[in-house]
Amino acid sequence: MDALLRALREELGDRLVTLAVFGSVARGEARRDGDVDLLIVARGLPKGRLGRQEAFMRAEAKVERLMEGLAAEGFHVDFSPVLKTPEEAAGLSPLYLDMVDDAVILYDERGFFAGVLERLRRRLGELGAKKVRAGRRWYWVLKEPYRPGEEIIIE
Image 1 (cartoon, rainbow, N blue to C red):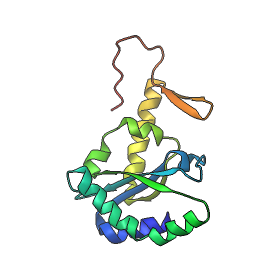
Image 2 (image 1 turned 120 degrees about the vertical axis):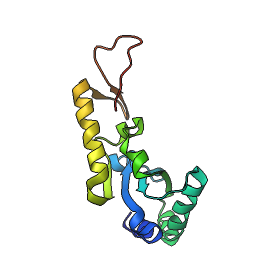
Image 3 (image 1 turned 180 degrees about the horizontal axis):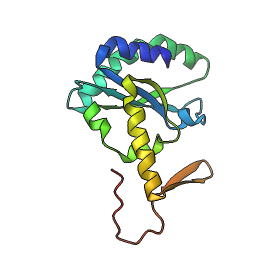
């Protein structure tokens, strides 16, 4: 992850705002053939998904040898990046429910994303939300009691 962070900083320069790992890797539940879920926040990203992926792929190419070495040791890892601008990332998203307790923030300019997650934690607290584990899986009960048809706003 250090090598990927260096590659992203080379590729994006001072446009990089946040690099966070979430999902099974962040929870310490990763498998040898799992993916690494990433949130990358950067200024000036292209509008389309493909343009954003190209920026990530240039950085990923810089760690290709390291990834090949991991594969030779039996770790077949793929990155699953989500790329957002700071404006997009500032709004609370259901995706962040997977990050609020477990994200590992590797780089965070001026605590930007840590602040977003803290806002979400406060809102979940206001709602009385709780994370419920069911074996290796989990889900959120956002509000109790919940009335059918009731709208729950996280933002």
